[in-house]
Length: 179
Image (cartoon, rainbow, N blue to C red; front, side, top):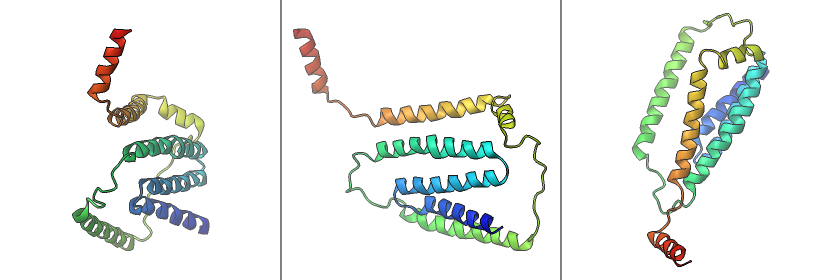
C-alpha cells in the first residue's frame, strides 16, 4: 500500500508539473514522468501489455512527435514578444481549480469508503484481449486517430516551412531559360 501511495504521489506531481511548467519541453518531461508512473500502475493491475504500450506509444512515439512540433513552433520566435498573454485567464483557472478540488474533497468526505467494484473481462490487459479490441469492430477509430496525428504533423511542417522570396523564384526561371 505504501508503494501505491508513493507511486500515486509521483503521478500527481508529474500531472501538476505538466500544468505549472513554463517551458513546453519541461512540461513534456513532466508528462513522461506521469506516463511512466501510469505504466507502473498498469503492471500492478496485471496489465503488462497496456504498460508496454503506454511506454512505447505514449512515452516514446507521441512525446517525440510532441517535442518535434514544439521545436518547430518555437524556432525563430522573437524574444521581444509579451511573456504572458493569459493574464486574466490564470486567475479564473486558479479559482475553478480550487472549486473543483474543494468539490472533490467534499465528495470524498461524504462518501468515504464507497468504491466501484466492476468485474474485469477475463482477458483484460493481455495480448489477446488488446488485439481483439484494437483489430475488432472499432478499428476505424484507431485508424482515424493515426490519420489525425499524421495530418497534424504535416500541417505543422507546412505552416512552419521557410518562405521563399519572389525574387529567388524569378532568378531560378531566368537561369533555367538561359541554359
